[in-house]
Image (cartoon, rainbow, N blue to C red; front, side):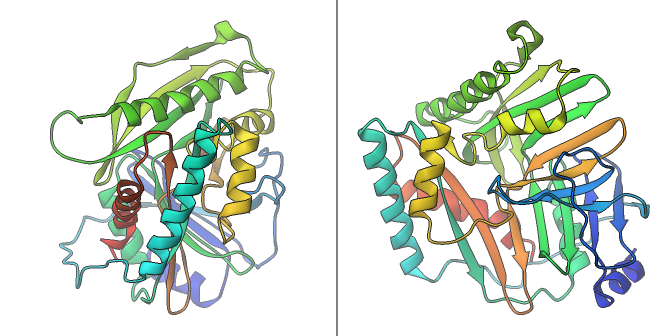
Length: 342
């Protein structure tokens, strides 16, 4: 695997290595040239990536050339030095954005909105493949991927949030929200996290009911889902929708309040006016599409790898119960999902 990875990297060929949640193999899709392929209908076989902005194109690396690899045994890894956010101006800007969000919530314009940050780490990655494998071993319940394309850059991530799974006639999504540090035993969820997660459940159900019958949808009990060193509240939502296309389902599901907010249009407008950077592929859509099985995820816990730095993307849901300092600490905790394995 390393020889092929290095060859693709050096020749600047588009490729994606990925492992879906619980799978025991790593899959590679790659291209012989650097041409762009699009799949706006989510109908082709390949691995797709779409930015957060729904007006952008869905880029696809076709599955025509693919290989599978056994997952290597984990190696002992010692973090060379701790990573932390030195730039206090970023903390100040985050506090300002959260304060603005709370004002809009108090006015009744919003119930929830996700405020995010792009955190730049001045650190070159010495061994890209090893970093990817460390994420695989530390995130068993996530889609872990390493995407490289000359036209989009290099992205890596370990996302726990499934947007849509289609396996023949079985359909599934999830409402994932609320964050606590992982500790053995039951998570001690507060009212803020429960309300935040319920907003996501309600919004997903509201969207689905626009295009499929109410009695075709069923929800699991809410439970704690582990994602690396974090816990999230999760509800699995199963439904039948054989008469609907994947593109139609994506249009009502994304962006969920877990990455945008509620109400949807008002929260997206707030994000566009407040965040001073382009989210790019962060909180967008990605995943493998096959003939019978399609798996799309929300691009969380992700970073863009550049020559001498890493742009890390993290966000948190703001509700009326949010506290500015605690929201910043949540972002720091989420950033460690990747930073601790550099």
